Length: 480
Image (tube, rainbow, N blue to C red):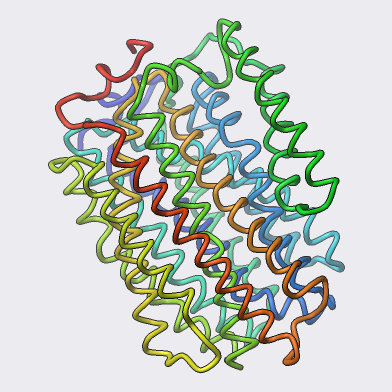
């Protein structure tokens, strides 16, 4: 662990950093983004009350961040491979931190959502490089443990977000949940500038695919917005445009020498392809849980933000405890076995959530969330290890960006589906007691659909094949 990072990844600038240092910095950064996202979910009713926002517009406070982040993840992953992962990582933390400060001063919902879009750009720069940095310096035999620690940081952020976010929202106001990102972000930037003396850019000298990046961005924006606007005709038109753009993107990327997304990673790499598909389905079927349960607990059950935050702690706390163990296991046990078991457990937990009512005991809700936490821990870290171990080092940034894109696109689709169902059951009005039965009907529909979707993800996870003993270079069609 104390060896120099230069031994685990090629440096294109003189210098180096210990593996522990890289892991520490990447893990701190990995904590900040999920902390911000989960604290925002618990603060949405307070934000909605100040700006008189309906449930759909409140959903866009979360979706705007996910949309911009998803759009730029692969793009910045490729930029990082060419120009330096540390450079992109540090700039991303700067954008994220400054936008957090400005969001805390937002005078209107439109400005708030615009700044969340900018914050998402910074988040994409961090997310597309943090895992790549860790993978650059840790060899395959130690990578699962390191990624498990990094995943645990995600769940610590998710754990702290609802509880601390609830406290800050209740006693300091919702703006405090964005303001707290400033010192945390500044600390990460300071450590990156002073401790990461090397640079990692394994694709240095290759051209950046500007045209492909533009098409890719259009496809994601059109698809995600189209899905969010369903069932309107505008939503259907955007989805059609996104599908046509996707066909054009695949054809274009297959013909250029330095594509933003190497299509051979998907065509000749079953592990990479199906692991990313499983990740997309996992996040698409689970990411709206915190948003929906926050509304349920605060509106239907009448809890304050602090009380709701305490209940929502159950899921991420279990993930924090189990993720490092799942990471170590993934170095020895086939990831498809662990991840598929995790998806099955998640599906069971979602089926249980689909049955909750206005008087379901709080203990039962906590138990359901804990079951989901077990499933997440078993799925995410082994699946991440499988993806990052299935490519060569030249594509680590793109692989990290692709995985992060699956996460963000899945999260956005999850929120988009939830908002679509809410618009059908509840409509664009503020949630009030007469609408509680309709709201509960929307919860049952959403969670039931998510549970069935998880079963599809489990099938994709099982079909990927083995990773251990069939490792990175052997699975990477590019041969790097």
